[in-house]
Structure formats: structure tokens, C-alpha cells
Image (cartoon, rainbow, N blue to C red; front, side):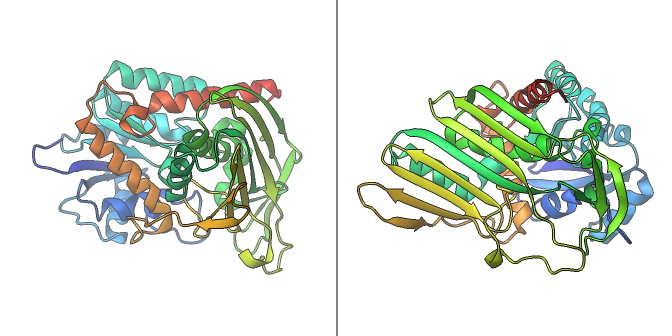
Length: 395
């Protein structure tokens, strides 16, 4: 990093808004860019896309300064730029490694979205590589920074509902018989991005932030839809029918936690409206997320009618607490959001970036958890758990 100040970022995956039907989630633009362009700790100095022209187009589309932001077309280009301190990869999961290996070998710090890569073996190779080159690294597991998660953890640490004995988390994830076209690759297990790796992985980060790590587990994965229809994300009209799917849509996970608590997580499919029918509003459906935590002195419940995405936030998360000796159910305020000026998707990402920047004060010998964020080593343990679940269920 330059002696002056800001961490200089090379961002991989920021594309100009597409014409026609989009592909992917545009996560770099919706979650990374809003914080990075307003940050006092970071500065974008380079973009890399599939070719330099597309990177230049993104610089123009997002009104970045072409005199200050370089446009690159290969991972090697961005790795060779001495003015880049941190390389951020926000692209499809099975392309993470190829985008970052040159920068790791060049000794640059790296940020990769979760999952690290498409499978445990490749993720392990990348984890070994960052260790071998002694580069600082961070993984996009940001749910622990959600103000709701932080508030509930504080309540539990303060003993408000006594010792935690059990917890159940039920989430509804869009999928099943239909998959929206931007994430059509979710039906191909070898790509590595799907409801298990992404949805389960992010929810488990939130669960372990509150309940502690897993001691032992059993799982059930079921694929009820070996063929699916790819649909328009807005109209739900079928674009491509009967496409092969080898990814589970029903996920059940039971665990004994190291704290002694018993935890169950279940991910189901959310019902999809018939094409042409108006989708339900939050007030006309049951919760998409329903998480209950049971203690010896009471219970805490977290709900959202909009989405299961605790890692992103939902805009309507509700915390309720019931204390047995008081006999009333009360709603709890999660507190102020220091990044409420940013779009919802960018807020927890902003807190993750802040933790990474602040960790330099801790020293490079500390592990990610001690620094306050997930590094490759921590994320690899999540990969290992998911790989075991696949094997246990014959996937």
C-alpha cells in the first residue's frame, strides 16, 4: 500500500449495465462499488473485465475517472500494476481462482467472494497459495456484520434469555421447478454456485456468529427437480424448458454446536407465482426467514417477509424477545446503521471492508476471526462442511 493512505483497489467483475436480459447478479456494482467510491479507506485504481474495452466501458458507465482508474483485460495485467494493493474478485465462482492466482503470486492482498471456488479441492489449493505467498486475504462472508446479527449476539452474550439450548432456522429460497435466467448456472453443481454453497454457506456464517461453531452434524439433501425451467426474473415466463439439474433444492442440517446448543437449519423452495400473476407482497405471505433461538429464560425470534438473505439484509428484519418471567413478547430495535446512506446490499460489505482495513493494526500473524473477518482459512472450513454434506447424500 502507498505510504499515504488509502488502500488502492483493483476490482474484477464490474460491468457496465447490460442491454437485454442480464446474466449473473451484478454484485460488484450493487454491493462493492457504492462503498468503494465513497470510502475514506479505499480507492479504486483499476478495473479488469474479459477485455480492456469492457473495463473502459464500465469506467465510463459508472462515471469513474479514466485518468485515475486503469482498464485491464487480463488477471495478469492487474497483477502487474504496482499501484494496486488489493485485488477484489466479484465474478462467477468457478472463475475466482483464475482471476486471482496471478495477483497472489505477485504478493498482492486479495478479496474473493464466497464461495472461494467451485469445490473444496480448488479452494484448498488457493488457501495453500495465499499462505505460501504470505498475502493478506479476505472472503465475502459478511453476514456477521448485519446489525440484526450483532444485536442478537449481544442479547445472548448479556444472558437475556439464559443459556442457549436449541435453535431452528427456516429459510425459503427461490428455486425448485424454475430458476431465473441470471443465475441459470445454479443448476450445474460443478460451477459451485447454488442454494447449498451460497445460501447455506451464508446462513451458517450468521448461525455460527451467534451460536458458535459446529461440533457434529447430520444432513439431508434432496433434488426434487432433476429438470427445471429457466424463466424470466420479472415475468416468470419460461425461456428454456426442461434443463438438467444436479443440485439439491431441499436442504436439512442438524447440528450439535460446541456450545452445547442443538441447531436445525432448513432451506425450502419459495412458491413461484403462475406466469402473468402478480407476485405476493410482504404483507400477504408468510415469512421468508423464520429463526428462533431457545434459551433457559426465554426465546428470541428473527423474521423477514421479504427475503432469507441475512448476509445482505432484507429491509424488514424483525427481532422479538420473550422472557418467561415477564410473560410478554417485545420487539427489539437493532440500533442505528452507520451505513444507512448506502444501498442495502452494500452495507454489510462496507463493514467487511472496514474490518479488513482496520485489521492492519492487529498484525499479519492473527487469523481472520481474530481480525474480525473471514479469511481463506475460515472459509475453507465451510467448504469442507459442504463437501461432507455432498458426500453424505450421494451428490
